[in-house]
Image (cartoon, rainbow, N blue to C red; front, side, top):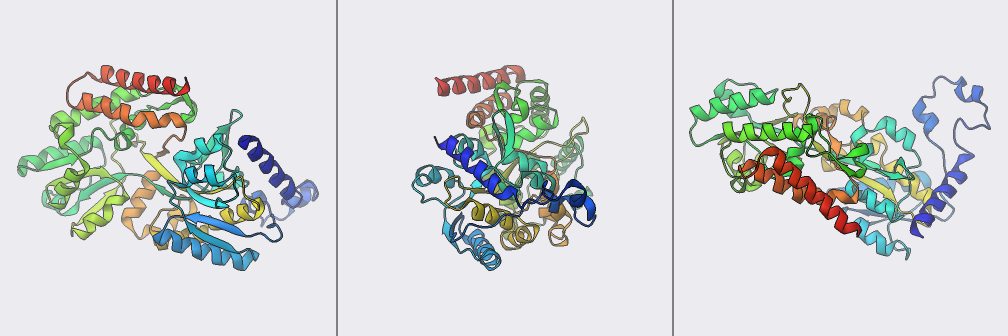
Length: 439
């Protein structure tokens, strides 16, 4: 019933807005294209008006994100005359809360959510499609759009309005590189070679570290070698590709890293251990995300961040990205006003304001060249790496991948299984978990 309600509401929204959509049949094809100054973005944006008497609630995270949401709400109210109340609801809790509050009419009309909940929210009929999907496919990074899309009636459709993207990069200690006369490594082979030289000259140090059981960090190698998690753009859980050729190549690289520069047990390479080694000047390189920046800055480390080094096939590691997005509640009493708020909040102007207030990277193509963002070399590196990332699969079956791949890569890293055996067992564990869930 929820799903049917969502479809009906989307249809109503489209019908109500269609009469004023630029380039519609009422203007005639020649007239719609006669003004060459109108770009495709303007032609693809439908002009819709908020409902009479509309009042909106917007769910958002706290702190800087709440301040940004208040800023957006004020500007939106100034433009459309629609009041917006801000309520703090965490983006990781919003989907679950909406499932209970939505039908009762208590949910936020627009809310911030994590992209990996999209598949579940779509299946439950909780969210509207993005009415401006064609425009957003042009403006936003492909990985961001994929992250907020879900398959409906065998067709991938866009549901979210992305506000931020996060991925990982290669952190390096600039002082240690300078002492060795090195430039930041451009390839994994160069990184391994530099690590060997650094460790020979500096006993009780490490050239490179990565958490071998953390599949969020390790996937970049598998993806860069052409491996995949699920088939059909990560929408088909019946096709699992983790133990294919790409997975085996990634396993070979992990084995090489272990044998040549990081001969520790998986249990001894935790995130805290790695961070401490880096802060103590005993680590040249490691892989992590923007969440680690402040801690190293507070520790007074002279460090930098760059895109992931190229693999031996010349490809970029295809890292995971996480996408924060706005969504429109399918139970909203004012779907047009809510849709306009989501669109307004994700304009270039509002997303640049969000970056300046929160430091979160906007996944908008044009903003990659913005001088404010480019001036921060670390954030610019993460944004560049995001071009080579894929959004974490958002189908429910993904929840079974993390633990299974941790077991597989732990067995591989600790020498308990050969690569093929370890990955085969991990894939079988995922299949068994999916099967038990559907019984």
